Image (cartoon, rainbow, N blue to C red; front, side, top):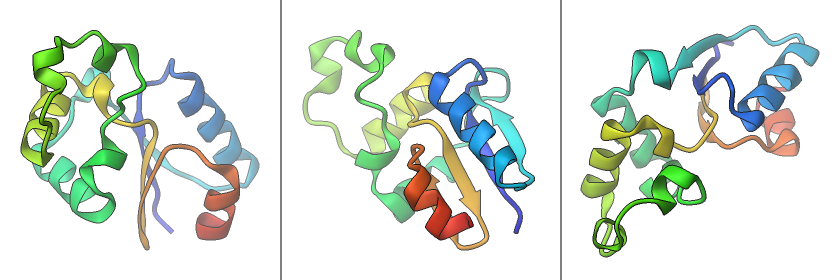
Length: 115
């Protein structure tokens, strides 16, 4: 199974996810949003698979610091534009695997899907 993990290396959740993958003996490629950015087509595919609400990280400080006008009336197109402009707003980690896409680190879900 080919795995690609998308995230920011200093994110605590990404660190936990990477440790979990390594402890399970699962090899993966890592895509650093900060260095490599995000791809519009990929974001659209993730939103189609999971829903943009699952891909957009509303809990992070980057989103919370947005002006209220940018938060009101969000739809998929606006959410994707925000995530492209500031990849820190993408939920972390995102994992692409042969069976689909996962957003966020949930060890029990990951074990069922990736294990």
